[in-house]
Amino acid sequence: GENVEQHPSTLSVQEGDSAVIKCTYSDSASNYFPWYKQELGKRPQLIIDIRSNVGEKKDQRIAVTLNKTAKHFSLHITETQPEDSAVYFCAAPKGDNNDMRFGAGTRLTVKP
Amino acid sequence: NAGVTQTPKFQVLKTGQSMTLQCAQDMNHEYMSWYRQDPGMGLRLIHYSVGAGITDQGEVPNGYNVSRSTTEDFPLRLLSAAPSQTSVYFCASSYSRDYGELFFGEGSRLTVL
Image (cartoon, rainbow over all chains, first blue to last red; front, side, top):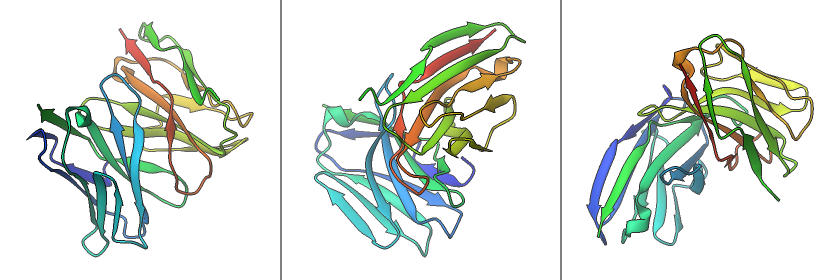
């Protein structure tokens, strides 16, 4: 979506390495930032989200950081495994409702 | 719970034909939406609904109609299909109209010849 830019579009890492995906958004009023994972041929599924009252959130090997001043947020995956291979989407809301605008996606490949 | 159910999973149309993509959820979710997914463009919002009887446009609403007569169902209608509407369509729902997890259906792959 035009409100959310996501980089890189593709990312290849060796198993065990870390992966970082970054998104920037334009609406300074945005206060909720989810990340979705989509495996090949499957539906997107939420893996982690963060609200603007915190700067970082962790869930095992996954973390999201938020910089509201710079209007960007990042997904960090540590100790990557082949099953982490998928397309990852960030999103940010536009307006007051759950009108989420998605980034273009990052295809992560983890090589064994 | 079945979650979010979409039908059909695959459909081929000719230019100018009309069709309806069905979406139903059994989680009593207030919010429902339709996205289309095209290569390199992520998920783009077509229409959404914050409750029965209420619908609104998203990023790319042209050529599509929706209605929300019940909490459970949110069909997407293509009025006169065009090749540019070839895409994978996802229905999604959320517990609240406020920000929260979107639960997606399995997707419907539509090809317009």
